[in-house]
Image (cartoon, rainbow, N blue to C red):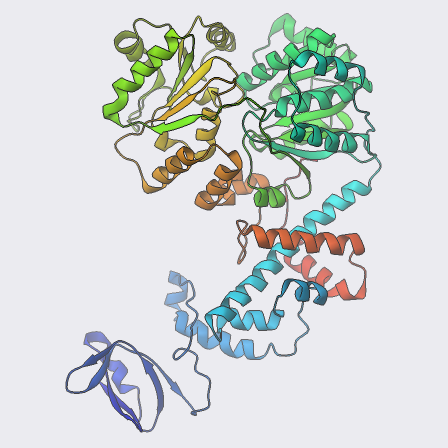
Length: 615
């Protein structure tokens, strides 16, 4: 125990058991600041208080009487006595030496415009803030700086790419474009037209196009990509689409062939399942140039595949390809234009960062006549009602998917497997309906015939795994049942739901969960039920999982941010705006006022900022 006093009275400082020794470190006459929970028993006392001994009444305290920093403490730190208290004792005098050092890295005009405090003050306020407001201002300044340096690298890379003249100048399609639009039976949306203008402008430029095409499920990305490919074909070049899975490549092949073959443009499919004579013919047609449009999987990057004149490449779901795979496909042409597509929207702030050196086009409008999908959470006791609803829809000429997470049960998993569920549903639930089974382990020919049967309504209920997640388009399919929805991510749930509602018919998505549904899984389900807007879902996904989980940090090269958050859309936008201003004014950072910034960038980012570029 120790007693401290001032002119107003005294307080007992009390420690129990193994901490009693602390009462012996005080000497009579020490100046002490103490804080803790006050109790009253024969006077005022503080049990196990925080305290600090200072040399004079004017000395600024470090540990008490102010907002104090709490630092992460690992085992190595603690073993060496480096607790938050010890770190504060080291950092405070180090901060006192910062005064007057020329370490500012933001242009003064930018700081004034965005209301940011100077760097020295920001560092001080983050560690030892004068108030909560000043702590926030310090964090905002450091966050902005981190994002600004990142965006400066990306904008600089984009500017450098635009300054090159080694691209292919492709013209917008005329004859074939008019023919295709005339046969569509519908008009493009305003957003599709806007995006096409952006793509055509890029294609006609002297630099190599590197553009990301974003759009919600069902927004019409494929027709935009096909119209862009026609520009390459009419300019005398070949176009290729590379998809990550055979079923998606086949789906692209069927939908693109349906569009292009009526106007006299042949399309070839090249996947691992194309064997023998068909494979040799495909190789020959691609090499001779008689086939202007090729669609395939990783098979496109085999050494045997030689293009006569590759000028345009579409990479679908590019995050599922490695950097070398993307680069290999591009190397089969002379700097072909690149259009990257994503299956579901990526949050705008994340797209600005992960794809910051690409130009971004967004289809932010859905085709007219689409009816919003009704999404419901189905409890186990309501399952019979759901089955009855599926039966009723089937009798009206509609079709349904029932999707499961795994192909077959394992000892480690209690999930219902599609193969076992198929037998149960066929035998016990829908003996009166035509059921089919689709999963990733089936042979390609079997998958194709099963999907064809589903399209032709020879199959009314398709029991499937997530092979139907992307690209499958069956107009009369109006019901999506997702079993064990808690096992799917938000993007997957949104993709699966997007397999229905492809026409003007009211469609439904039913979510069922197992007995064990975590809090995070419930949040995902709540998000999916609350909105069908893919961009809102993407933002919610970013909040729930973080950028590294959505894109894969290693794959996309997103650096670890120490202070900033990519979810802070306001700061990301402001940082990118300032980066554009500086790069447009001084592309090589040669001006005297940008020298400090150039040095900092080289030191901080030179060795570790390695972005997986598409180009």
